[in-house]
Length: 286
Ligand code: SF4
Picture 1 (cartoon, helix red, strand yellow):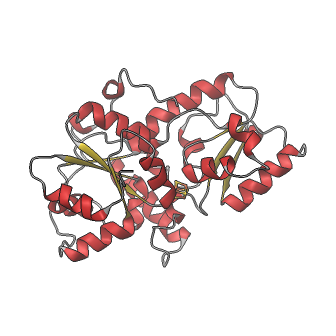
Picture 2 (cartoon, rainbow, N blue to C red):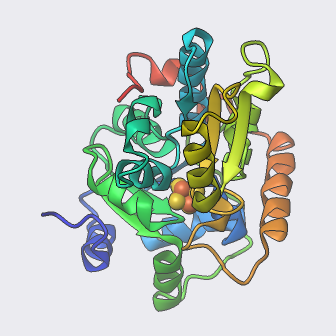
């Protein structure tokens, strides 16, 4: 099988001037790399175009809204492949498969949009975890995947350091979904207030606690809950296994919130913004 995480192959592709590559960055990147310096670092490495996942997150929020508006049974978020895989592979919990919302993750949604706006590019996802690598391996719209640690190794290998150059993502800027890598980021940005009451949604980070909740739910507890916003890692994606384990979750959260604040004051040209017409005609359902 074609291994999309083969670093030698990715390095070779980055050196090939005839093939363009677009990189998609998960917004948890701010706990690992400096913004905006990371953008020129990635260009120096050979990426031709750069976007982050926030617009894809906004598009899937719209799907969540439509489904939750009509649903009466428990709906489990599918943004985290760690959760999806763990439910699928747990004999006691696999009956919950039917409750997992049939909506793409932000990675797949953004990759679909990238394939539309950059039809000739290869698409590479820069990831905070191994589960996303498996997800990328199994989808057609992502061609390569590399994690934060591997990216740091490439920067060291080619001596690419953060510089003072000012740069911006090329397209698909979106601000408020920049909190997606924080636990609860999905339910805070999906405008659910009008359709669900406070006691109908529950946010849980860390698989052990999600597992406990699902077992208790099966036994008849917490039946008022209609939407579970869940992530495998403590703190959300900022706690991913390929993120800097020396930084506390609280510090990483601060960095994400600082990035959100900074983004709100950035002067982004209209052509670079994530506007709904850029995703026209794309289905974000599984
Ligand atoms: S919560 Fe963890 S396992 Fe899930 S997508 Fe984020 S980093 Fe990956």
